[in-house]
Amino acid sequence: MKRFYKSAEAGTAPGGFVVRLDGKPIKTVMQHHLILQSQPLAEAIANEWQAQGTDIVPSSMPLMQLATTMADKVKGADRAAMNVEILKYGASDLVCYFAATPPDLVKRQEQHWLPLLQWLEREHGVRLEHISGIRYHNQPPESLETLSRLITGLSAEDFTVVQSATAVCGSVVIALALMDGYLDAAGAYEAACVDEIYQLETWGEDNLARKRLDHIKSELEAIVRFRDLVRA
Image (cartoon, rainbow, N blue to C red; front, side):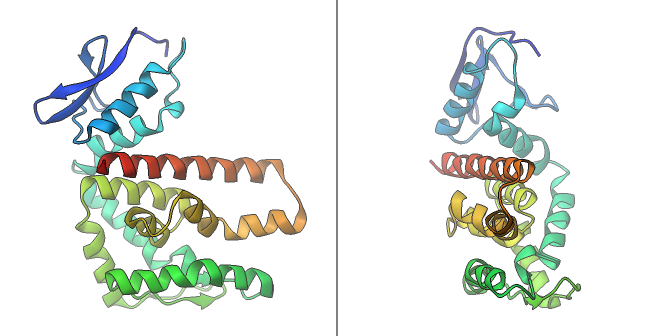
């Protein structure tokens, strides 16, 4: 899409803050008015729009994408279905399935994942069991019920962080730790990509694998920035 506006700026509106393009408030993909509760987030999104060149590149506006998801899906009828989808990750979470070998990979997984499982039980009362191997393991029903209540009770802002990070990391445990601030973007990246980083270090660089890892890292950095801005 060609750029169709000259200037982008944040401003106030009934109910919160908006981003205006040539004085007109922007709308979401589903044509909802984008009303934000954080002025710093509105200003950052306005900067994303202002930084566009001749063509608008949506992938270069991650804050706008996250805010739109929050407005169109998280605050709408899709929320219940999204809760269920995230809970599915918890039932077979990445950090619950340790490798059997080699020992140095297992040790690295333990260093990253065991503290996360301990944190989740300590802070949120959710005890997820871990095993060696890829055979499916049924988690305690009471743990999944507690996890479900936790997910359902998240604010729209926190849920947006968790939903987005879960999709990127393949782990709701990592996503919740990122939301709570127990992990920063670098820590979430290292925890989510333990196996891939190990493979690159062991067997050498692979361009496609490195490109995928760089993409994960940049997405997590954007999610953390969104998290911090909505709380500012």
